Image (cartoon, rainbow, N blue to C red; front, side, top):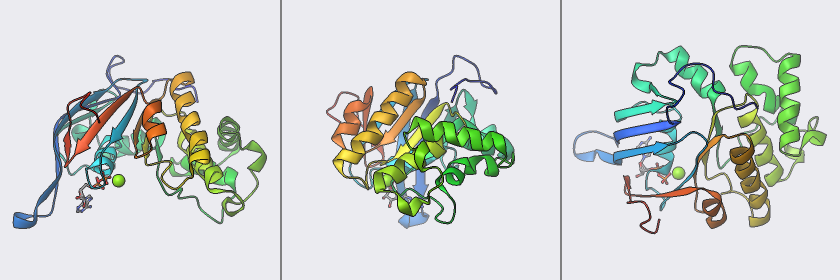
Length: 241
Ligand code: ADP
Ligand code: MG
């Protein structure tokens, strides 16, 4: 979790830069814009909350920032590199090593231990799950306060603990940015607060950029900047998002 920034892209570039980004689903008369002309920058080390009603385009925007959805129009740069001109192998490395993802559902694999779940990104990254992966998984679990549960199965944990395991998995490779889609959406407010505290400290102490879609006022309040989305369009900043 060094949060270092090796591996390409101009050093001074923002974490994310979008210019006139639209995303349409469907064709012809049924076509619908989930995002429309979105331009924004997220600086390195910034913590941004995306707010807006259900269907506003928050998840669509996160998927584009995370190079998970490349069906957009417009320009998207991640760490200074244009996604459209990035070969598939580099996109995979970007998603696996430089970005971390946290979703509302925890998506832990039930037949693996907590430690193995956290080490999984090393398997997907092709480096195997050897001692280095195990050590990194334990460091990440320690970071979220769950090292003592490393050998347990996910189903032995509470919802809040499962989300902290998912967060450990997201940070296990020391990403430069975290993309979180309603990470407290399945948690009660007390356990949600633990996750919010961890996101805030990863942002503050590890200088990770954090972009989070949320309905949770306490999570929005932890961000340094709040952006409102309505019907796929960004509202003017400070417009009471
Ligand atoms: P939010 O996360 O803010 O609730 P979404 O980004 O999930 O909003 O969705 C924005 C709009 O795009 C919604 O109208 C949704 O139905 C539509 N949409 C999202 N993904 C798809 C898809 N894969 N196919 C068709 N429509 C989609
Ligand atoms: Mg959503």
